[in-house]
Image (cartoon, rainbow, N blue to C red; front, side, top):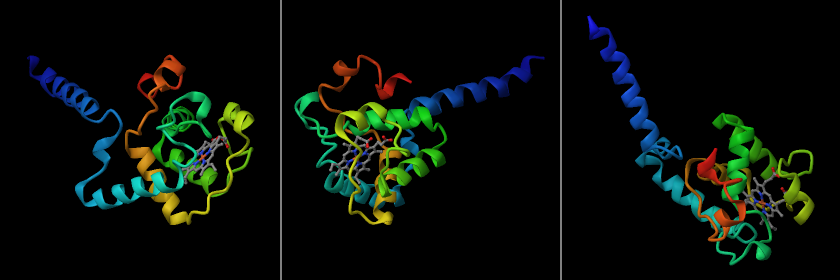
Length: 153
Ligand code: HEC
């Protein structure tokens, strides 16, 4: 009676294909949210990339750590998406040394200045960061050698 194995292997196969399809949780976004995603990206570029600019030509020219690395730190510290978002929104709406988890960057750059962005927009930005693969500086993988690499956790 090996019929009993069939449901189990089916579950395994579908779990496997699911994890292949959504390495960055991309499937969380449905098409009706597309507008919000675009808004989130536009706000991110406008309010955050001034400092967290992934197009900075080298590590030394960054004004702030790249968000792709920050995201990977937050994912390790807060594996649950609700906590990830709450922690990031909490920090960004009112940055402080106590709330920050990036001790090295806070030392190197000083604590991030409070951005003049309404809470609603910060939420859209953080939703975007959480659900999407972020642009990565060209030097990022080399610099981190796997440490802080989002594909390596
Ligand atoms: C004026 C420059 C500047 C702007 C603008 C800026 N940041 Fe930052 N950010 C920094 C610096 C510098 C750090 C590293 C020091 C720190 O962690 O506070 C940082 C760190 C962070 C961290 C990690 C905090 C921690 O230590 O846990 C997050 C998350 C973050 N920024 C998100 C954002 C978002 C989202 C935006 C846009 C709304 C933004 N930042 C805009 C300079 C900036």
